[in-house]
Structures are given as structure tokens and as C-alpha cells.
Length: 175
Image 1: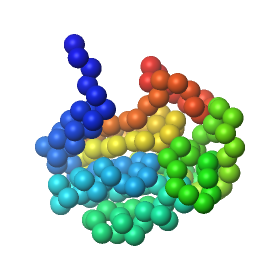
Image 2: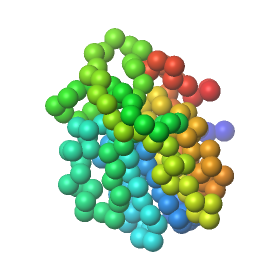
Image 3: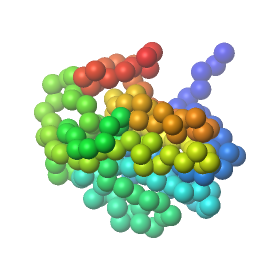
């Protein structure tokens, strides 16, 4: 059996999401919001929300995302509601490897406080269907824990996971 490439998996996820036409599409850890941008143009009646916890990334991409029918939110998503520490790698340029989790490798980070919420609290409606993309840099398991109600009517999830531990206490692909 041939394994699918990353691009083939993404294409399959997009096609399945479009075919399903969920009530809501949610992108957690959206960076520049590529999935949200693409799917918002393919599913004009779907509510699309993109979350970015990194304030540098959020500020950098907000103007571009305003050109789409996307609810772009500066908020961390996890398994609790409140304030949390976000670990920035850089404070002056965009980056994709910042996280709610502390790095297990020796890179210096800059801790900042950000709002945190769960997908259950922000989105759950029993009569809605969902498709979710999660790229939470080592924090995907916690995002799923905070989406337990949502998962009952979620049709597809694409979650980015790692084979190697980059963050303290992160779950790996085998978990």
C-alpha cells in the first residue's frame, strides 16, 4: 500500500470537506489562514473561523484575511478557558514554531499572556456539522480534549502531528 504524500492528504481533506459542506469550518493555529482562505471561497454558505494565538502572526496577516469571508480571531485554543502563556520564538517577525507548549529543545522563547478557550465553548451547537484543521504546534491533543462535544458531529479533521518531540509533554503521532 502506497502512503499518501502531505499534499495528497491536504487535497483529500479539502475535497471531503467541500463534499460534506459543513455548517462550520474551523482552523486552529492558522498562521496565514491558507485552509480557511481556500475553503471560504469553495463553500460560501459555510461559517469559517481561523484562530491564531501568536500576536505577531495575527497582526501581520489580519489585512489579508479581511479580504475573505473569515472570522479571524486572536485566541489560543486548548482544553480550558482563561489566560495562558504563549511561547514566542520571535517578537518582531512571523514564525510558525511558536506554541502554548514549552519547547523541549534549547531555543529561547519569549513568554506572553494570551486568551484561551475551547472549541466546545466557542462553537458547539448540536445541530451543526464541523470540519476542523488543527496545526497547534504540539498542542493538538489538548485542542481535541476541548472539542469533545463538537467531535460528535465533526465529519473530518486534519491534525498535524510530529514523530519527534519538540515541545514538553506533547503527544506524538503514535499517541
